[in-house]
Image (cartoon, rainbow, N blue to C red; front, side, top):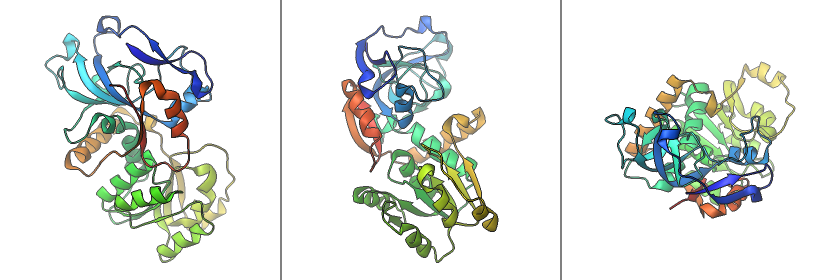
Length: 326
């Protein structure tokens, strides 16, 4: 089969298209399904792992990618007659090996049935964004109906998922994005207002839009830039949840003391099995009733994975970056 392989950590050019053996169920235990992959999502964490800067490093060579979508083409005897059948369209939440390949192995608890209403590229773009957003919004942020929430960096894959989930939870949603196209996209999703976080004085505009009250909940995609400003924007006893960060930042904790506000953080891989099941159920329900619609910014062929890794790190995101495998 064709697969992207990384033979040495480094720049995007380390992503090369190789011919490798198709994974066999017999060689990988009895509890994994084999999925014929049609699309794989590209996430920023994929670039950190490829560069060798992530906290953990896979053994070289390896195939990148955590999530994707495709069709089950083989099941072990232990899974036959269960929740999935050969021929089912599925979302791969976390593959046993990388998803930048024509075939991937996946445990049943990491598969979601894919609704007919979405295509393979949308299915591939589902899990990481929506599960991260669900964890930040509900499991860590403890969002409540009617609360005012700010999604800082709302036009990226996770940001848009936060916006859609918050609207589904009947919250009053505000967002920020650096590009006019991104701001328009967030408004299309139903946000009450969207501001340019690269503009001078946008914090004052945000505060004025709340009548000076601030935000009960702030979901932060770039804490290394915004966290100290978020302490000014958060409401009394409000919560800030850090989802993304790329560097240290200095803050003044006295701002938290005066408002009795709090800062916490959310990470997808921090979910325990029960939390993961709740996230899967909520996402499946949202996809089925149309409340959640994955949005794709750009599609690349499998052999252009290096270009996709460059694209996912650019500013001005407007949805997810996806590899089309077939």
